[in-house]
Image (tube, rainbow, N blue to C red; front, side):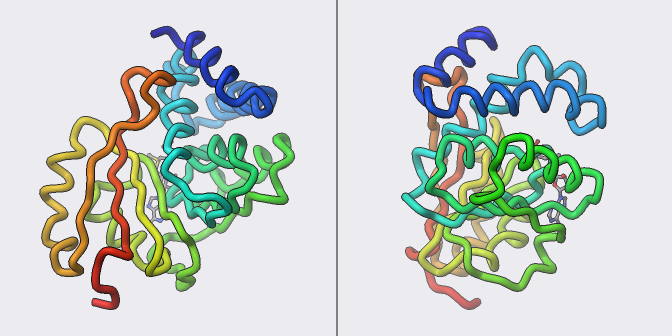
Length: 213
Ligand SMILES: C[S@@+](CC[C@H](N)C(=O)[O-])C[C@H]1O[C@@H](n2cnc3c(N)ncnc32)[C@H](O)[C@@H]1O
């Protein structure tokens, strides 16, 4: 499926968000590439590999959830989620100043300041535990991602790291961390019919485990 087909499918699925999705696409292709947040080779696959890949995990996120996007970089997956799901409160967690400036501009250009905030920090230094969903993409392998994000999400919440082909082997490597807390992870494919190949995400529901260890 071509990049343009992904664009068309996203606009059909979220017509009310089409204008802002397009603005974000264009912002990534211009400022995002000029400032080195994404390579120029990403331009022809910005819809499929970045925006569609990110946005489809919204189907796993409950209404009105507070979502933290750990290592947000250029706003992926947090900004596409905020665009199509105005009911969410999204925090973009990012330690690097240059990326934080880009995120601040993106939030302003897209008029998202009522539902998106930006926290400049490393995940391990954040002491709040009030998010319902912890997501992230291309930040670390699953084992490290869990250690970074675990403490940010409430005991009723869930972790939704986006993964690629290595999802199953990363889940196996993280089994020690999960078993110790009585947790299970499930590899899911989401976005069928909207993105090809479908997005791979690992869902870890914290309410199924023992907390505090
Ligand atoms: C490869 S980029 C991925 C950016 C974006 N999530 C994406 O998919 O395009 C990894 C990002 O994680 C951030 N990062 C690395 N270590 C982190 C940590 N300990 N806490 C929060 N963010 C971190 C980096 O600054 C960088 O922006």
